[in-house]
Image (cartoon, rainbow, N blue to C red; front, side, top):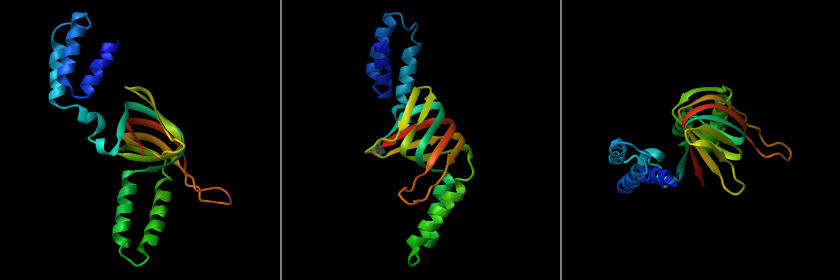
Length: 198
């Protein structure tokens, strides 16, 4: 069992030589039959599959948490969808140059985010960004049960690739002693789920 984990680690790290050596040992022990495993490892290594596991995001500390997964979560977080990002970019482009433009940008961006989040159903979004303050998201998929959770002293970001499902994300403005918050509930499926700890 330990050798299989070592084989998985070698393949993920792109260490073809070590992976072939471990596969050879496992073949002698009777785990693998034939030479197909060696061809698969060579093919996998020649494509440098280690870059697929993290989408080339090594410099931003995103780590793959799960693939082909069921997603459920609740807590306090802000969701940003592709149309949100595009709309905010256009708002900055149109109003950012004006005197006091930053105030207009903030006002219209908040207004856009408020109205765009009134629609809870989302279909196959290419990317969904999540800034988690409290609570978290649980994913159940090919990598087992994994959690993306908010931590007390660290901000945690999540990214869902190919998300389809329901997201209820409401903005509560500050009132009396209450700070601004964005409670959420999400339920759906995702092709990949990533986490970034800041």
